[in-house]
Amino acid sequence: MPWRGMLRRPLHASNEVKESVPVKFMLTWRTRPGLYKAAFQQFLETGGPPPKGVKQVARYHVPGSVLGWHVLETDDMTALAEHVNNWGDLIDIELNAIVEDAQAAEAAARVFGK
Image (cartoon, rainbow, N blue to C red; front, side, top):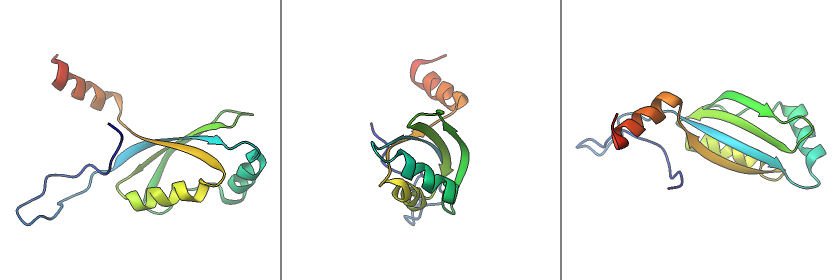
């Protein structure tokens, strides 16, 4: 099932969300044809930082390629959307929620047993 939103703790009787949980995302980008130089110019001018509320965990580039990855962590979907919108005219973006090995193993153990 595609990522649909934030993970939140269950609602209380008052229908208020108690606490949001930061989620890691893998942003995969491919520079659009003919925009390689423009994309790198924007990157060199701005550094490509995520907005306030989004933590950069890591960023990777394939040298001489149009492909790269940006690992981000946030509980602010609006700030995440802002980051994607800042680059949307230059690169195609795929955004996926990700988990680390321990989380994936725990989930698998719950479903498939130990």
